[in-house]
Length: 301
Image (tube, rainbow, N blue to C red; front, top):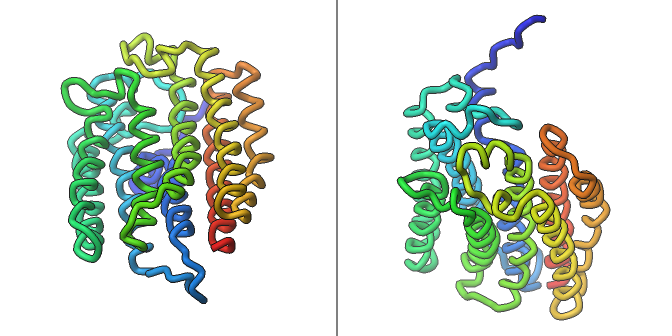
């Protein structure tokens, strides 16, 4: 049997950045920006260079967290026998110190972009940015990573849901509005569902390596029900936003049919490589949801 062709350096780094997780960085910026639209005309009152910087911050943080996770899991050996996407350190294809440097570079780029936004709006964003970077690194880094204690889902929900969405609206309006926080909840739930999918797939190897993720703690069936509850709650909140604030936000329900396929696979009891398709399906659901929900928020402004 012929061995697979070696990957180019560029392909390696792209794979290590885990592109299927990037909707988790894109969607909160799109939704938060749309929620900030004030209906004041052609641009709906949006300052577009701030949107661009917010997007760069979010994407850089996502890539940084992915590289940091790759490095920390790799040096601990928890990626040595892993089902799913390529890991740079765990596969032995890239030296750990190089992956660590890439993670720090991505965190640094996010910090610079965030500092510009802070200068334009509020210095409170510096504190928020520091919290994001520390949470991103210590998710699997440090002596006692909280991701190994079952708290990874909390990190994703808070930072890639609430903070990223509300923050994207804040850099436009320079205020925090309660209903925007409500809009951020489904964004956070779908981002967290990506992690739940990963951790569901990795229950056997994480259990063996001593990584006590939430999925390991809940068990296989409990994790599957958690995934389903996240999807259901997402669309219930869309209805609430549509009825309570901007009726056009109900366009977000157009993502429901996209969510059906991954949900069926999860409920079927699929394991291992079969759950890799669920990761892609969940990312697709999140992206379609982000586009349709944000469109509804925008035109309803």
